[in-house]
Every structure is written in structure tokens, then in C-alpha cells.
Amino acid sequence: MHRFTGLNHLALVTGDMDKTIRYWRDLLGMRLVLTMGEPGYRQYFFEISENDLVAFFEWPDVEPVPYKRHGDPVPGPFIFDHVSFGVEQEKDLWELADKLEAADFPVSDVIDHGFIRSIYTYDPNGIPLEFSHNVSAVDIRRHPILADRAPTAVTREGSEPRLQQWPEVTEPTPQDERVITPGAGSDLFG
Image (cartoon, rainbow, N blue to C red):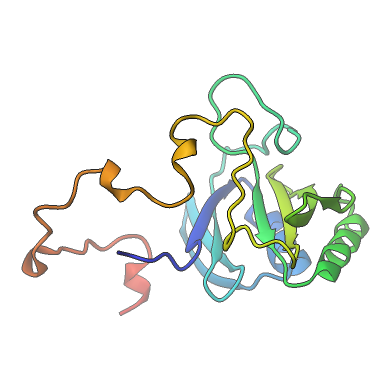
């Protein structure tokens, strides 16, 4: 079975790439590792960790999203609430909070969720962000905690994948028929 290595990249949107670079590269300290663009189109990638990236498309007419508190339900179509970035040490939360406050970005107190401790803020695009540190005594990856008091029937099946719920692959793509189509950026890497 395949194994995931992390979040290759999360693609977000900005209307102002310069403000986005100042925040993500210069305030948060994420390296700008790839820029692609031409008139009317940009896509830039920032390094979160050795396995993970966050990318931004710059769309000229996009506006910052309206304020919404992290986790608050909203009516109607919606696709994204917030993204949480892990930090190595708990003291990193305090360092980040101080940097964000010094740069006039609102930031929450450190919140203890039992398995993580987090701070909450927003980037210049209005994107809700969380920065989290794992509580060392609680490892939900090794020991899942399914504590929903009214779980659905599917939830009651447990934490482990039930691959038999989906059809098995009976006709895998033969090696000589595997086609890779060039996309944006392929011309940069010969």
C-alpha cells in the first residue's frame, strides 16, 4: 500500500504577493523556494519543513476573506476553516506570538487542547492560521482517541482504514501506458 510523506503543498490564494512574501518568508521565516509566473499569473512556494510546502497563487481580483473565527460554523457553501502548522518546541509558540504581535497581527493566547497547544492568528489575506505544538505525553497518532459522544456508524468502525469499502484495482495502468503530461513549471527543470 502507498504511504504518504506529509503535505506536499497546500495551495492558497492571494491578491498581493508582496504582502504574502513579507508575511510568510520574512515574518514566519519560511524560505521562498520556487517562483513561477508571467503576466496575470503567479505561483510561489514556501518551505514549511523538509517535506512540506505552502503555495500561493496570485489572482489580481481576489480580496482577503472576511473575518471568521477558527472553528465557528458558517451557513452555506464553505470549503476551508483553517490550517495548523506544527512547531518543534512549545517555546516556539511564544516566540511566534511575540513576533505576530510586534507586527500588529492579532494573536490568541496559547490554548491547551489536551493533545496540542496552539495559538491562532490570520495572515494578510485573512487566512485563519493555527500554530501547534504536540503535547509530549499524548500521541494521538500512535494511540487514537475516538471520543465523539454521538459518533456515526462509520466512525464506530474505528480508526484503521477499511480499504475493502472501495473496489479493488483489477486493471492497473501498464508501465508502457503511463503518460506524464507537462504542466506549469516543467519547463524550469530540464
